[in-house]
Amino acid sequence: MKSLTKRSLTGAQLADLLRDSAGVGCTVEAELTDGWFNAAYRVRLDDGRPAVVKIAPPPDAAVLRYERGIMATEVMAHRRMATLDGVPLPELLHAAPEFTALSVLSGTPWDKAADRLPADRQAALRRELGRIVARLHTLTSDDGRYGYPAPEAELSAADWPTAFGAMVEAMLEEAARWRTPLGVASGEIRELVARGADALAEVTEPRLVHFDLWPGNVFVAEDGTAVTGIIDHERAFWGDPVAELVSLAFGGDTGPDSDLVAGYREAGGDLDFGPSTLHRLALYRVYLGLILVVECGPRGYPADHADRVRGTLGRWVAELRASGKQEREAGARLRP
Image 1: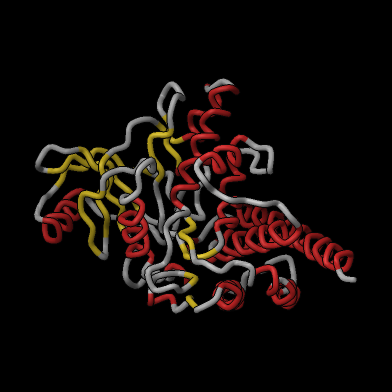
Image 2: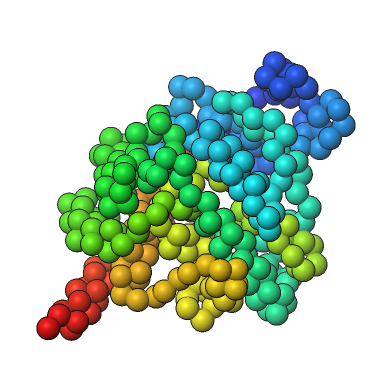
């Protein structure tokens, strides 16, 4: 995917960057073009190891507020996840403010393997992914704060309703800055988020949420027998584990009877699907929808992509309206 945030380097420039920061140069074997934000290259390090190098946008590149300090967020999340058993990751070989160098995972991204994997293996993989996500969600914030960990973003708070409200407001401000048509009224989104404050307040512990576990960021074995790794943790924040279901839904069913949720519960994860949970999930869909629409401006995505994600945001806002109504009606029935 072409993006204005991707930094273009020659092989010599990339080798110099690694040598200056990590003490080891490299030979570029291929540019990896699937990413939408960072540039990435498959390289051979001078010590012979294969690696994937991700390069942050240039310092003067226009990025969204939540993307400030995003490379440090990815490194922090990676290092925290690496302390867990049963969460497959590439090895973090080198890290610097401008780049990360990671070992090469075995297998292939799930989105590229899905068409050739039989249904029973897909189901087993979804169950395994659920177990992995449950383990990931055991990680909690060191300082007890919610929101994005990078101080540059200034999007964290002592409670989840405040942090999430600030995250949404930042996206609405970016939409105004980039004059991005949302297809829905900003005021309505603000009102819907405010109405969800009580549901959001039920989240009382900040857990690590990857928030980008679509199939392209999940590697599986060539024969589909195992999940071999998860990648691209830069969108991670401290918040409600329920939010993870938003990106996981791009890979299949995430409902209460799904294989993914069965695996999640097998590994000790706790998920209910009552009205409050479903209301929060609808809020998180709208937040991701805002990201997908607003990022089209600074990244220079084509009009057809912008139209498609704008339609998705509109559908998710409609679902949020309905979810909020359902929760209010359920609450009314419970009152004496």
